[in-house]
Length: 412
Image (cartoon, rainbow, N blue to C red; front, side, top):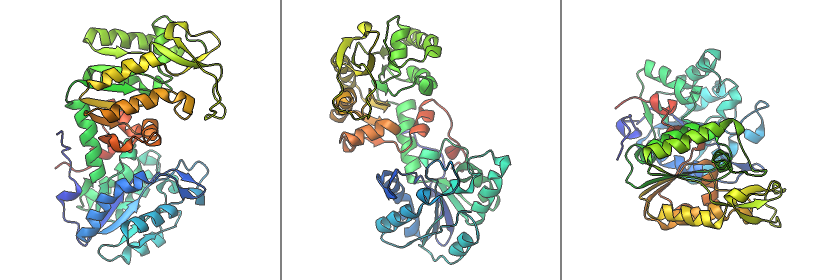
């Protein structure tokens, strides 16, 4: 296994020490209630380990985009309640919009060994995301003042060099504290790292989703690592057009046609299989509402898409080709749906790929984001080896980029 050469929660004694843990509690909310608690559950092993050791556990996270300043809709209050239930002990929530103000300092000073405090949404501070020189530095210092040690367990935020993700480590280190990664970070890096650097072959990568632009470097990096690269979703039509076909009103990124041609040539040169759709499920408009089950479809060969129709899912011949490729794989990484999976009529391609992954004995890794939602939505989540908690972070990892949340932890 590709092990992460970083200090983990198992590498220092936390008893009696104040440990600041950056979690990823950026959970979906509906009417003030948490609609999917996957990320909270994923954080529990690290939190329980520290409680069991007798640490004073201080948790922090962001939630939402916080475009218009602090608001109750993006407060972490509901997360605090969910954590109390799951841990079977009281989690003290500090509602202070300043995050690290007097209320937080007081709550931390009153902690006993094994207690848990949850700070308010880090983005309420307003400077969480900005470059360090613009006061993210000050916020990071105040966070570090509350603690003796720091643990990053927020894989979903590990690709961002934010105050509470990577800048804080500088100040913890200055006072002689430990900067470690949690169990979730270890697990994510182990699965994704092995898949990319040390896969059991054949290694099949599946990329979908709407935009080629989001996946440019991933396509290039994965072509060098995998044996077969499968392309689906809206981004496939730019490739199809680059092959010289007409694609009707399907999604297309005209500025990336040359890039797609280059990638087709690169695959050929490296002797890799690059699989593109051979047929498509088309409609004459985008479904509105998106789950409109009455939408009329027509299946056509990929080089026969009518001028007034758009490709919305991979067709049956493509499904057969893609699922056959998955059957022989020993490692599969999947990021991005094959079509508009939110619509029952246009979800067949995504469903078929998920089913093929569920049936294979390969190591199957789902790279967060829409593919994770699709797998859960379709009921295949428990059949996958690993579902990443971070869409953006897993993409950057598959691109071969270093993640600030990992880099800033102490080496072993």
